[in-house]
Length: 487
Ligand code: NAP
Image (cartoon, rainbow, N blue to C red; front, side, top):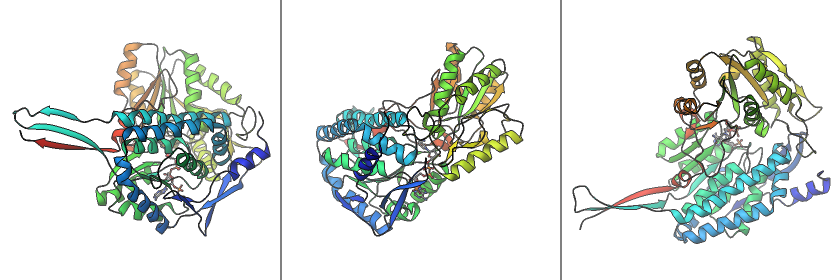
């Protein structure tokens, strides 16, 4: 189904582009231009918050905090459930909006709406399962009671690559736990989060419980919020570099943080792997979101006996992908987010080939406008290439080989990151031992995707602190209070 110009203008016109503070939409004098990365054209202007606006949003979150924490868990859960239903009912509108501002193909944007909405459903169910414990002290006498309480006002900073899901993954558990929140989406993709604000208000989220600010000065606006003693938690998804600086700022106040940071996922193919499944998994792990995912397979580490065949099949599949505007029929690969991203991917590919890598397909930009890069496979990549050390964030699959399991694991773990690892083998005992030895917060075995709202998402090493989703997700927004009771 082709998207019409009328559909596009209605979808864009339906978004309130002000700041959402205390249930009110406020305009600002300055605005930020939002660009469609597939054309380079401006599609909207949104409010540009100042540091003072940021603090107004925090005021609203603080004013609403006590009442929201005291709201019955069932009521909090039902509001989240309603938000899930509204979001699901408007899936097409949200998908189109995301495709327009971020570039991902419509089919993938629809997938993100389903995934993002699911966090509201999952946490609507978790809201009523918050519990503490009661025990007798080992020495007898004293009784040990633990209770879980909402952390308090939170500040969430989200990236551009998943404009909806990275927000719902924080808003869902925060609201379920009884916390209020200020959300700051990336300036590159603010529209989806603003549209979500409208859905949340309609679902019955009280004024001030969720506040949304968009700004072109993320550092200047965030700093006073983070240093304000009323803020109780910072939850961030983005690059490791920015995460490090936010941890430093938070350290001044010993502020509770959750950090979902960068990745450099290894994708291991053992000699006994089912190659059909491995190639399917590789395409998903590499090409989901145009390769612009923290979970994207960044390093293909393939047993030398199957590497040529794996590379050949990958190149065939990659070359067959349709590249184009995400709104066009049948498109599987959209543009990268901005021209800087094209420069970075081009530099990484050049370094890999300078060090001996051989391009099996792709290797260049494409398209007359917008920021498109060809799906690319490079074989014989030297493990000390920059492409193996940095997040590619683009549709490029670099392949290297290994001889034995120890070498595979050591190559896989040779990174400061530790978000996710993937591997393919048909041997169960190998699967268990390899999963244990990989230094990452998540492991995909014989599958190229791990994201699931019912599972704890998060990394080790420089990939982050904390988990989102699963049973663990709500814990990030709860404090444990211990009460000792003498009999
Ligand atoms: P980014 O540059 O770190 O930006 C992330 C967010 O931080 C944006 O909202 C950005 O706003 C804001 N920001 C930037 N500088 C800031 C500062 N000094 N103070 C406060 N906020 C600041 O990352 P990105 O390029 O948007 O996203 C890609 C990165 O996110 C990749 O590294 C990817 O791996 C990671 N990621 C991780 C996960 C995960 O779950 N682990 C999920 C998705 C993405 P502005 O852009 O408006 O300045």
